[in-house]
Length: 409
Image (cartoon, rainbow, N blue to C red; front, top):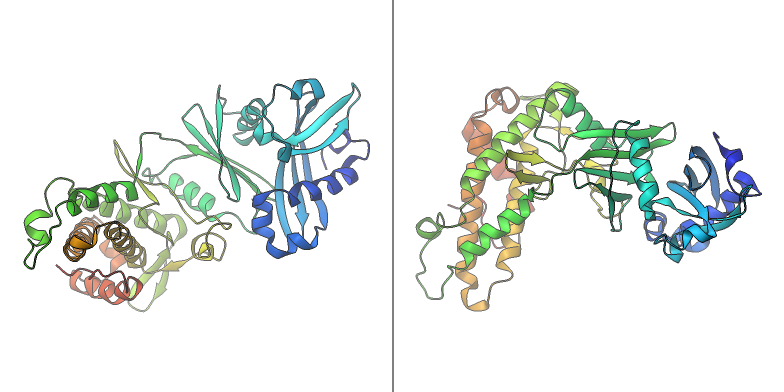
């Protein structure tokens, strides 16, 4: 293990192994990964250690096994007096130690802005640097760090047994020229697994779900009481109409599928090619920026989604390209139902009618943009009427109970 002799601990790696067990037992992200086994005690094993910076402050990347899982801890250390000016909470402290100069404190370096800036250079092989760093706190299998409001790092805390699909897909799509994504800037890995991903950060981009909810709020503000309310067709295209945007998103999605086919190849099944799918394509995965739509996510976090296997941890998902389209249509229906649930009882009936029309209108606009994109017919391999039939067979069961009729208008 490179640099293990430079650790500021008298007991070296053996002492660190024991200390990290106690540290992990206090971390919510480790508890979420380990579940009930964390309460029964941790059996730890130091898997991999790389010294990134010797001296003070010091920095090391440590991979430790615990109860069958693997974790990545970015370890920093400073003198006791230096720690007074570092905003590190008690839960982030690993241990007290000593180097040749004197006493030091070892802690989670991702809580230290100076060391987090140094980590950016490590994760991008020296290609990037920054002046400022801020941490976005969440319960996830990674720490989220934003640099100079232009770069975003996922520093993975939970090490997965296979390459992260989001890394595979982003790098592969970027390689074949698909530029409707937050471009990857750096990928840090060792033999023990993926350690970090650095990509673009665009603070002006707006999540697709946020756009959809704004459109629905504008529409549902027109809901009325009474037995013969005006239908969606007479009022639904005013104000916050999303039809043109969904048509553009359909085009972007078709380009993504053609790029996935190029990057990962085609498989064959009766009637149509099988491609590498996005796997969990919904309105929180896409963002609208000034230059168009971006695909911003490729897989659920394993700590916060029971469906992570479909797009994140399991084997890659392949199938007909319209399966991703169906995911997007389900997302439109779900966000519409969420907006309807906030309406007063007096206008609930009319709100459901309007929301159903909104889902149909925007699904149709998306499908128009998708099916008219150059080259997509080679992947769809069916006429428009067959594509609609496929979606009508796939989506309704997944949105049952939402009170919305898919493609009802």
